[in-house]
Length: 541
Image 1 (cartoon, one colour):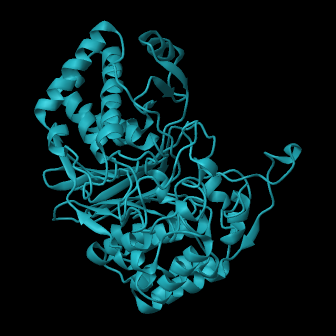
Image 2: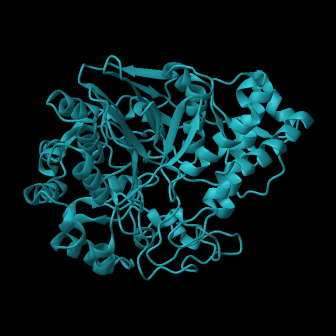
Image 3: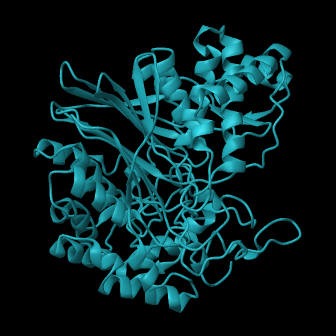
């Protein structure tokens, strides 16, 4: 293990060992969905150890955005392997009742010193020492604090100082922890001997006083500006310099979270809105546009399943070859969303389905994990899904110890090969798998969802939307349906809800099939007639 970053166990210690038992409770369960009770005030779905924070905000009169942001700060305390204020960032999809949907981009930003060839490959095509994944070079400018503040300031009703209080209390009072493997890719090493692993562990309460002091400073100022342009930024930049990283005070000062117009497609009287690049919402829109052009809902079950897989594969292939930060790379977004392109791809899929074979594509495999998601709606019809991350477990595994924060590995989301749309570059933002999504009907929000699970996220969100919007199923059925996991290659993951018949079907088509769970999905529906919200969590199986 190179000496310049933490093991997962050491990272846990550096953040006060804040992994709680509740955040781990869903690992390995077989249930397809888990319903959260919703009060008349609304519903919040997310990390089970932190959603009580958002639920209380709703009960106290805050709106859905207030609830989600307070929960997001709290998740960073109770599940520090997945996210935190040093996280590389994320994306939010917001529906402010009575207004147009908006997207918030708070993805990481590469430092000005970043170069396309900064992560040279060895003879095996790997980055030596995985310095793009772990260590100070793997960390870019963290966007989480800026993004959460922007969403709260523009669309919430409560001040930042108030929404930070639950997280501050957790830091100072401590939380109960169990050092066992965690949800999704954010697991950490079990320090016990093999004979003891898997047994129930005693709970111990831990605090993160350094992080508590940081959050109290932001609360006292009622602003996150000093995190990027002030004394806190000075400490972060100094830590990068000591560790050999590239982020400077000037890079931090240049960072801004951004409000963007969502990508939108209409289908069956519903509007589907999702986050634009550098998030992966375009994968969702492209796949849905292709299936809509194909007349997908009219197909019989087996051709329908085959066609769905091929549409996802085509969208993944385009992501691999064409997607990048649109401020630095010309991405043919309009063409990929056009009816002409959808019809062309639909014809290819029809040919493949008829011939019972895959659409021929040249795609490199993609592997990335991590993330957490919070979805919320209130009685007034405000809705939000916010997805945020360190990356995989504990991100870059480096810490600004005097601030109590672990830094995410946003630079790992760039393709280390130069000359590609998603190669590193100065002040560039990497592609992410995150894609919180909203469904509207007649100008009102009715369904909002997001997911955690790396490359599985776009597939899982697409399938849930296809079920809800395309097939007209309710939210429970949309989340409970079996999920395909593809990155565009001929490797195909099937979750436990698929049958042996499904496995044989795809194997005969030419796919290499294996078991793989879907992403962990959280969704909330809202009924404008009753003003009631209902939250559901689809568990990975």
